[in-house]
Image (cartoon, rainbow, N blue to C red; front, side, top):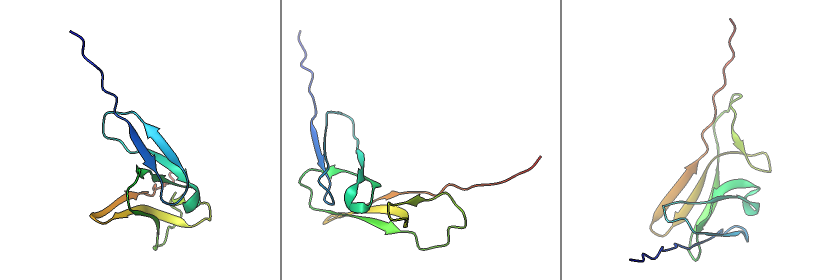
Length: 103
């Protein structure tokens, strides 16, 4: 018995820049890219043809020396928001806490 192997093909694009990607992963996945339209911020691709808006959400609180995500313009970014007609998704860039200690 011969069993054909099915290849899933997914086409991705970005509404803010000209970047595109083709993947053949069968499992759920979302590739990311450094978006030229959002000053180099790593944001997810969206399925090609999706009517949506991808925006950077600036951090509005005090960073106090935390290791945070910044875009190419030096703005501290806390998330990327993907808004569609049926809802919103977010990619959160969590800050990294730092500590100093002595022995």
